[in-house]
Length: 237
Image 1 (cartoon, rainbow, N blue to C red):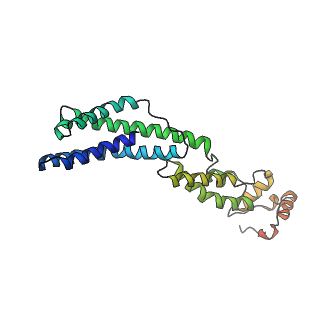
Image 2: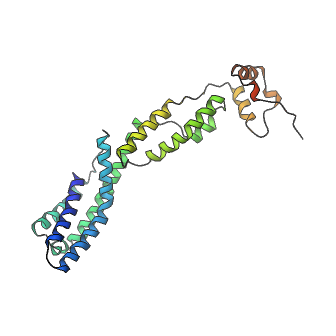
Image 3: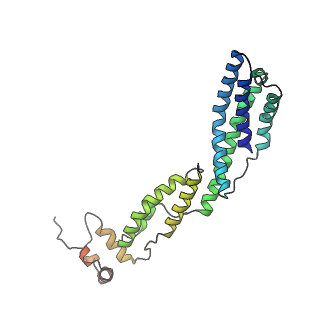
């Protein structure tokens, strides 16, 4: 509704410019149309994003101040329809009031849109840990290393798309796809402390100590077919 009103207002200015006679009047209308278009651009972008979300069945709340902020815009639009001249728009404080109302409305719509989008992402999309967190807490088992390699690029793209309300239908489709893919990645979380400590130490330049290669650790390594993945070297002091 708001998007339609804003586009109609811009269209009326363009049509009125073409219909009016006189170079001066046409230039004044062109200047006003440019000012309004620039001021309304953030509002139009927010309304496009809102329409994209609604199309995807994502709930979007209208600003509480919507009716109040629309009133001066509707009043000026009504007066201009009745007398489509630049003088009508510039009489008194009509023009600065109109531009100010459009700016306020754009901010209110964007704020409401951000709140609605954040609510959706927190309840309908993947909410797992970041790659950095998973990399820090997971035992460096072969399974986890492979899973983390898949996880990292997916999570980075997911976070980039999730950060702001979507611009296109494709953005939402891709975000939902990434959410599903991330949710399907399985990590090996139940790893005994001795195994975890050995794997952590063996991945450092210093390596693990011989004392960490317990029977439990050796049995785990053998069970996972990793005996050929480790060697023992003397420490050079």
